[in-house]
Length: 380
Image (cartoon, rainbow, N blue to C red; front, side):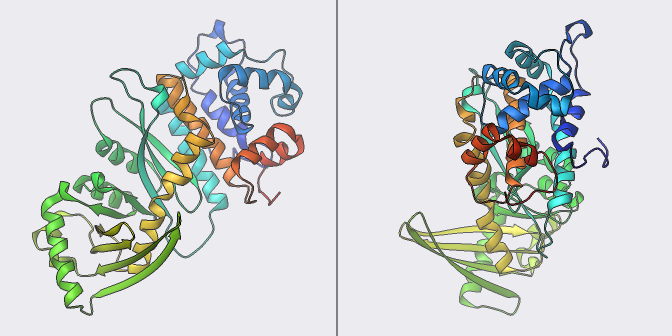
């Protein structure tokens, strides 16, 4: 999919055609072309429908609207045809096209804030899609500023997030971004992969990296008692969920204080701790970063990191009912990407309506639907 494939009228058709190029069905079974199947599915999901039957019904009742984009249709695909296509489609092909598409979306819409885009990486299991001994777990990279998933990687049945994250960051365009992840992904190979992709990292550190954590803790404890010129500090107050939380970030800009650990972690420029104090008590989280010392940035980035839970995982579960899905294996993985495409498109409408109302309007208001399939977006 090249840079010229998206124009003002073909925003969604472009990705539908790209995915269709990976159609592996037998020719004699292709009553409906893959572009039609993907386009109708995405439009149905944008409009709030989620089962194969609902999607097929949407295509039937919205046939005249679909023909504005697809041309004359002799008929629309049945639920069995749609289901079979997404079961056969290999998720890695879909994911590759999704990443290209989302890069073009971001290139057109990314605001110039002067700050690095925080990309939060976190994993999620699709509970309804899991089978005994075969959980469906997906690792997603989420742009917290754009509210868009940049890509995903399937976590293997006999492994965990660590190799999946290293693979994911090597495939994404994270140049100039600050990648955040929980302590599980604080790994030397992960740091190296992010630096090689021309990104920066901010990774939390726990006891899975015992020597590194002890070195950070020792220097942070000393610095809290004896602050020096190569230390900066930032504070914030939050009152979310009816609970006041005071946060302090202590950042140290001389990584050589970490001793031998400094030589073992690629690109490390600073480290420190974020101390949170609330009615639940005090909690200290240690971190390392390849960014130069900037306590305010680190404090803001750690807050943004949890946006992957509210902006993506929560939305997939609540707005898209992902955990209740009965789709299995390839179909579940591909449908998760369809949902993320819908989130990306709906997020680019900057009005303050909740997603549920945007999707309802997509289903009922054809003028709104047409406007949402165009670039640029407006506050409708």
